[in-house]
Length: 79
Image (cartoon, rainbow, N blue to C red; front, side, top):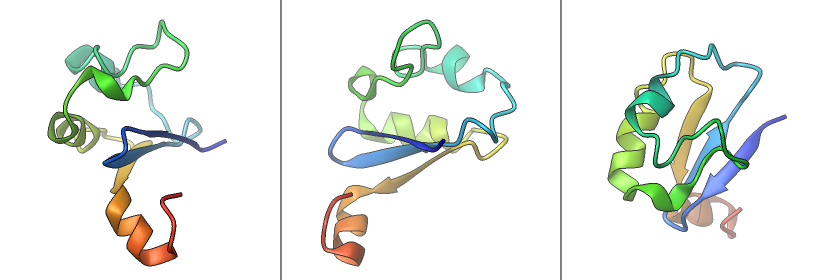
């Protein structure tokens, strides 16, 4: 099941079935990605640009993001 997490500026999309558990997300940005917590993604843990940098490092593509203003422009709503 695909999960979404947002901070208002961006939305992270997590596809758990694609995840290879490389641990890059949480070993490099534990303030946002913490597998010990539920939910495991805490969007207030870093600024938007830092979160984007980390999501872009995901080797499996299980993590991706979109900018909410782009989604709003495309669909007429933010979600």
